[in-house]
Length: 273
Ligand SMILES: O=P(O)(O)OC[C@H]1O[C@@H](O)[C@H](O)[C@@H](O)[C@@H]1O
Image 1: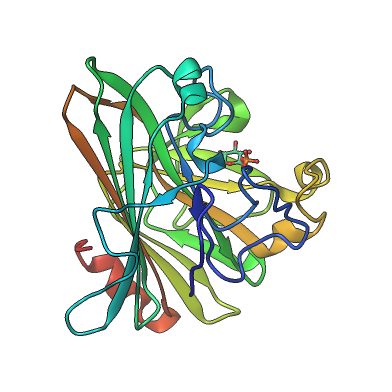
Image 2: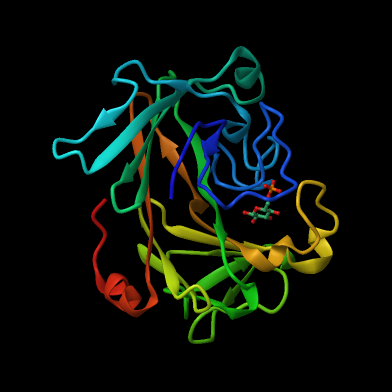
């Protein structure tokens, strides 16, 4: 995995739609997008909030590029503060700091710190809207969400309980798995690797694939591209996060690609990002 610059998200190689539209300040379809201060259409803002559609700046509290002591990790620190226009539609002053780190082994980690610099409390929802590249969606399965409750966005957020062993795909899926464990794996048999997603501070996992019919309605997405992608988002959606004046919230994500044979070891391990 590699990353380059950020327009409201992190560009991870090979997980962009071939017809994605790059027209700043709008987020491109793909990568990892910061959904803040709203997920989906749960409030009055544009879908998934405005943070993914803003130009972020380097946080001058840190050097532009950071290397850790033994040189095994490199990171950049970005910051987003609301513009006057943002404050008109969401009247809460915040500082959103994002540290994006890439290890020598290719593990990508994102740490978001959101601080209330307002005189009053505010609440928000959040997601790392993460596009994963898969060989064939029909052959992929997610482990770590079985037996959980989920809210089905395709049925007016009705609550269901997952029944199967692992989650597999044969039609459109748009679900919020609630109170999930902190490690989830996406197994891709054809590629013989798995994505391991570790999270902290983010109780939910959103799983989305638009399948054939919806793909045809999306202008920045190829008709067949649903076969090679899957979104698995570490998120805080079911219950909003509330910050009092001066308080800060932290939400972490780590994404690694591991060989499928080692995947179950990762599922057993506790999170340490
Ligand atoms: O097209 P967007 O705004 O990037 O959103 C894509 C999808 O993102 C998912 O996370 C949502 O659960 C879906 O409902 C939504 O359709």
